[in-house]
Image 1 (cartoon, rainbow, N blue to C red):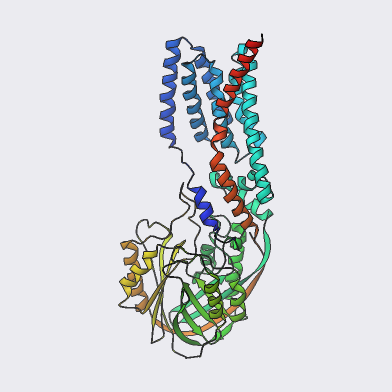
Image 2: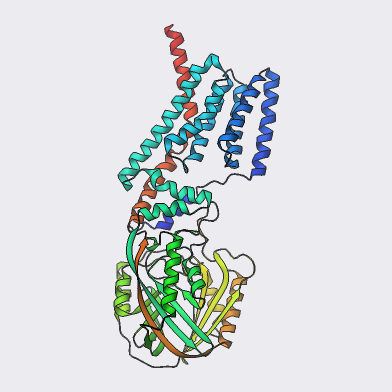
Length: 545
């Protein structure tokens, strides 16, 4: 498990919110045009029109070097023109303004190239400008060299700190993440993850319920549905539904250490599970006992009890639930307890040792067999419009009825839910059901798709609650007797997951992110520091002479 109180998504969210989105290309083009006109006007008034030629040469160089990124061209060109205008109003040669764009160019190249290569590429526009002013070329080249050395030393300092924390240079571990996110191509990150992965065997629980109107497979694999977007097993739920359309995939104990390393691995696992679910071999027939709701410390568990298996929808009202400890799987495997993390309320308080021990006792506890008849109704609806936190606008509803209690299970494609949503749903359908529980599979497929906001829990809106209420009605009309229940426990072998290395990386992000936030300004002021040093050297030389 991660270190206590060090939640991976909390750490990532802390730094993800620091990301600043550049304006649109249209706005940046207008800004650049305006700054360029100002520069031309100043140069004309001061009779320094030759500087316009130098500037155009620099802008053309930027366009050639960074033609694959128009955002980089527009932004760094604007910096160059802005600083050029400032220098036009001083006695400094214009060429000394160009290196002020170097740190910005450097940071744009870091996701793609190693530090030295990124720095050399970022220095080329400044070198081009310096050759237009042969009288000061020695000073301008010295100026450029000082900037490059300071930036390089800064990154060597970060690497030194990173090796102490994570055992590897900072950018070696973070570059694949940054590049995949910026370019929208998961291949860079997934190749990196394959190199640090751990091989494990993945247990999978499959519960099959057959009614007069169809059959359903409830799937619980020992994996986690991350990292984000299409990376790793983020879209496993959807792959599973593709291969086995009548399935609902749930989230069990465990966190990002159980993420698969690539979408290909995820797709292969989904295909294998579907194949096993369709096979007639190794099924165990179950007899239904009863629906039962129990308070276990701060957990509230809505259970379907069978003679040899129990299926528990686990919630934690008021304090939230998010990624229960992975070691609960040891008990679940031994006692045939399909414990589902409903992931339906943002966690505001950590799990305590006592409540986890009580949860283990619940898993191990045997119950008397009652033997009621089970009925099941199912519906699926589409929510109109955008609902914050929903990765897919489908609302899937199952209603279970044992002639004593009616339990509704509302399945939403999200990563957790607003704490008020469950209460709103209860108020809306409380006259028809004894219990209702909202469930999300910890869906990461829409995580990290917008700047500055890692993800949002499913929000509580009137539109969503109305669709859920209608879904409940529809499912109750669809109710039919469950004719047959069977259970299968399979093991998918040699599956690549992130493993414990993710905890090291999260710890590294926490430490290195804190250092970077405090010092990130330093590379951007290096041109000013270098300029001060140049002036000092010039004054010293004149004094000595």
